Image (cartoon, rainbow, N blue to C red; front, top):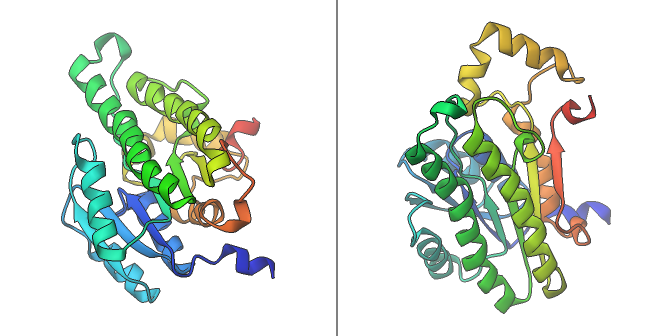
Length: 253
């Protein structure tokens, strides 16, 4: 049956930045599809994700650390294997942004964004990819953005990092698709989450954004969960190296 292909029963999913926003929605959806969850976040505020996963009847391991630390990926993998014995799905969702005119953008801020949004994502792909290669299977889902396609305004480091995430997804696909590992990327549009509070509170920019979205609204965090389940499941077994926009039609304009 086709719906059976979307089930994640018995699988283990690691989701970075899972305590809130898109990460919380994705982790919750994966749990509802049957996966046990490893939630990775900087803060210790994990009540929301713990409640959501347990309500779905699944197990959860919460790890509080900074994904930008050079040893973070290996520590998460070691803890996951020690607790669950295997790993099947990795969702690289953690990310940061900063809005400053490019002429004034501080190099320290640029480096911090690249380290969190790109370098750490590569390290998680590399470390977990080795384990998935050993196992002979795995699903990696990277979180891109509309700025994987576009340049945006006053976000040079964020745009650069998200373009690079899409390119890295393609590169890893070329090496790992024949080894049983799917690597794909989700590109959310304008979502009503914490990261976009400044935009939502700007009456002019918020109106301009809303007028351009054919769906007539900003996205909600829950709009991403279904695609994450699809890409994590066997239903997407022949989808490799894709960056898929969830944008209410923004890129069609």
